[in-house]
Length: 134
Image 1 (cartoon, helix red, strand yellow):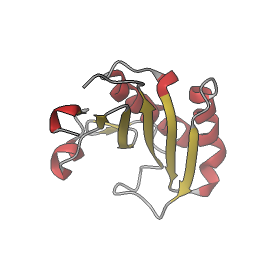
Image 2 (tube, rainbow, N blue to C red):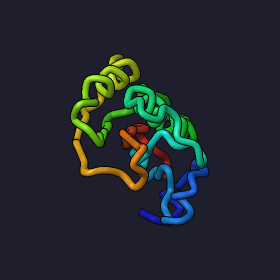
Image 3 (cartoon, rainbow, N blue to C red):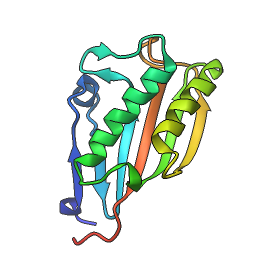
């Protein structure tokens, strides 16, 4: 696959610049969204609220796949990392509200923590865009 067949988008997160990564990358028929939290710029949305952080993080991820002309119906995989297992019900409720109609495969993990201790949730999304002309 040539570098022209790979397209990247940024969301403006300061971590994208400092760590050198893209918010989302399209390669062939896949669009993969990097780990995404409820930060928008320097502001964390839903501080202390795992449900709200999940909705905001997935909202940012869905905005990223929209850059490639895709919507939520194109999502085939999600990954959710939680800081606390006690938040699984709130996070699951937010996930179901967003993805119940498309039912992607998902992985849910409890992790040791995040770079910023106020972050309770990080999400990843993978979408399928079908046959792509290259």
